[in-house]
Length: 373
Image 1 (cartoon, rainbow, N blue to C red):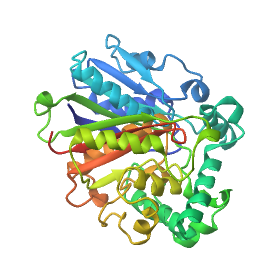
Image 2 (cartoon, rainbow, N blue to C red):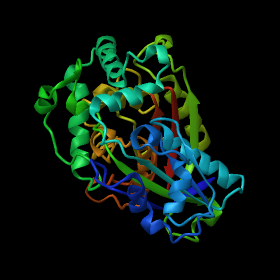
Image 3 (cartoon, one colour):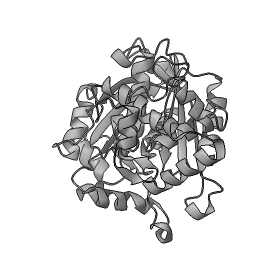
Image 4 (cartoon, helix red, strand yellow):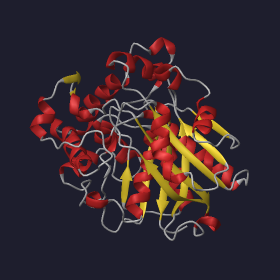
């Protein structure tokens, strides 16, 4: 298996810097290592930045011209997929040290255009839908099927904005009340503005090596104990229902089996919309189906709860620069397990989980991290 020995991250938000400067900011302290492969997690550099061949441009910009590189594009699941590719390179001994950097520069486009670009991950004939509208369908179905009160979904935003207020790298560092969430502008009924992720720029990076080499670089490596990956249909019309994500269920089963753990201490989930955190918390196995909303209302998923979810603030508050998000989840896991997360530190965090999801459950990568191999 493999381990993370160092990380870097920029503040997420509407940044004036270009995509290369964001990468440099995230990787500046990591270039001291003898990196022999660079994996770039990025989905839309062509659409957002009129840039192709991004991985080679990045290695040149970082003065790593002779280091091989490649770009991984799996839409919003790119970060988890990039870490999986890095793991494969290390375990095959094609590389001894891999730098994974995730980046996206999105904020220069208007919201309507960003939504249209992201919707291109749907089959062509179904692009009349958008990911925010699919989330609203999930919210309606979930409340109907499990008798969940509307407030339980909004409470996810209250929790994650609180966590984000403690994260100096988060896009939104403002706490919100339940009333403010429910009174914010409607995006897709019944979900409101504060229940969706903002459009963000940012970059995050991790340095990975094989387990046996990890202690040569740090006294506190964070080990990747297991990774599971799975796909499901991209066709909205073929999804059996909207209150479960089969790719997440299967990826989680694989990850837990490989990691040989039954319990985790925290999770970073893909809360593009608040309802997704609740659905995913059930699909990864933290709560029984239909009971995730109860866990939110009872405070079980809060920072001081039994199983904190999205201590970073999640996509909801930390932001969602698409190529960077899955890598940023790994950065958060690294900080939490090393007890370096500051005011948002989860107590006794030894084992954590991240979910990097593409599209609306088109694919998923679940990673389990720990302080031991």
